[in-house]
Amino acid sequence: MKILLTGANGQLGSCLQDLAIKSDLFEVLATDYKDLDITNEVAVKAYVEVHQPDIIVNAAAHTAVDKAQSEVELATAINAKGPEYLAKSAQNAGIPMIHVSTDYVFDGTATVPYKPSHLAKPLGVYGETKWLGEEAVRNTLAEHIIIRTAWVFSEYGNNFVKTMLRLGEEREELGVIADQYGCPTYAGDLAASILKCCEKIMLGHRAWGSFHHCGDLPTSWHGFTRAILAEGLAQGKLPNMAKLNAIKTDDYPLPAPRPAYSVMDCSSMKQAWGAGASDWRAALTKVVNLI
Ligand SMILES: NC(=O)c1ccc[n+]([C@@H]2O[C@H](COP(=O)([O-])OP(=O)(O)OC[C@H]3O[C@@H](n4cnc5c(N)ncnc54)[C@H](OP(=O)(O)O)[C@@H]3O)[C@@H](O)[C@H]2O)c1
Image (cartoon, rainbow, N blue to C red; front, side, top):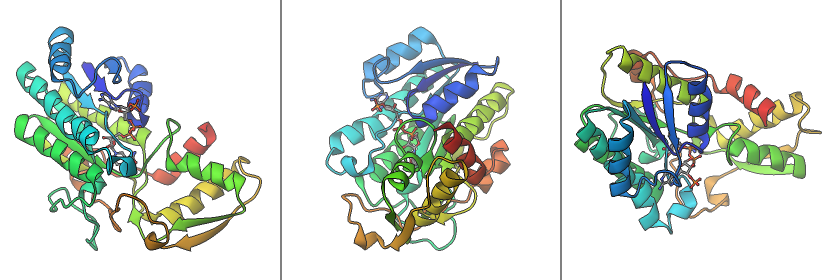
């Protein structure tokens, strides 16, 4: 199966490449913005026509949540228009597309895990543009899988795990937000689930629609940090455990508002594609070891 992978050098894209290379089922056309800028409609159309992939996996995104507040045009181009152009090309080529979205399409006022059908109400530009991208894919291409994920970490790129390990080494005391709850997700686990979908599609399985895929046990940024520091200490990557203070969202003002609760229900993805919520603590052990 020939996969056109966009955003191939990001966290998810890198993990997808690592896994796909180990399988003889997949040939990956790995592209980042230098090879294929998804905001360029003509380039996207031409790339799909020339290379004739069997499926598109869109891992490209503008993921800088705070920067997006002041980069509305750029975030819209990458998160909303790019997915639309990819979906149009997939439609013309008669192939399906897997598109990745975010828990930040929700406003965080729920008290039970969000199901994919829950009303989207993004709080910031990143969430809003990702929502527009989802809608463009839904309205353009019937054969789509939209997977919302959350709190992504990996051995690649810049992410919360790396930041906290660094701060844990530099500082004796850390204040971390304890009133936002979500589900950390290892990009490698999400990548494995995406490839599972690809394999099933190849075998004729069909279950198009929108799904959630994230780590299993919900936690706060404070709880996640405690797990990161404990893992760093256990693996000898930190000399000691920094004192961890719980702070409130209001104590740490940022340009973009975040949902206070973005825990997602992953059961429909499990039912439709056999890919359930992932064990983020096991993945954390692996990632801390790799960093
Ligand atoms: N990271 C998270 O915590 C998180 C949470 C929820 C959902 N998600 C979603 O999960 C998916 C994967 O996220 P990630 O963490 O792997 O993101 P990432 O590490 O930021 O990777 C995104 C990639 O897209 C590339 N890109 C940016 N503009 C592009 C363009 N115009 N054309 C082609 N490629 C372009 C980026 O290149 P440059 O780096 O060179 O710009 C980067 O390599 C995204 O859909 C994201 O919205 C992420």
